[in-house]
Length: 151
Image 1 (cartoon, rainbow, N blue to C red):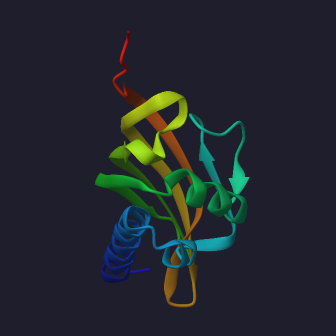
Image 2: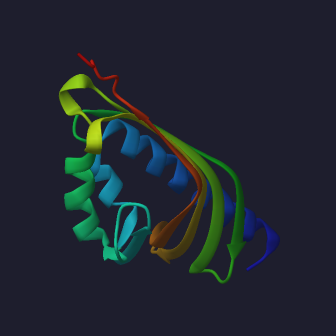
């Protein structure tokens, strides 16, 4: 793979991750699912006991984020092109989840702010790069509770 091909692959992976964030925040679950290989494995340690398949993850994320306003940002990707069909990256990230009064988060949570890194691998299928594994590691997770009336 020459330098130009490598730069194009990096740009395609950046666009893939941009769609990831947009599809999560707009809750476009059909578009979101298409970003992953069929055998993709995801790991979110703060909410899951063990890694899961993309299809198992889709069931949970739809329910968890129903009625929630989320804002996800990815920064400063460290993308490594391993071959013409395989790559990996680490993305600095931050996210915010806002639970409305009618969709109180778990344990009365009103808002969650998180900071950390996505560790991902990618596979090129035809002309498209897809996420084949994703692991989120958190550096900090802040939770804001809904106010309570004490009488």
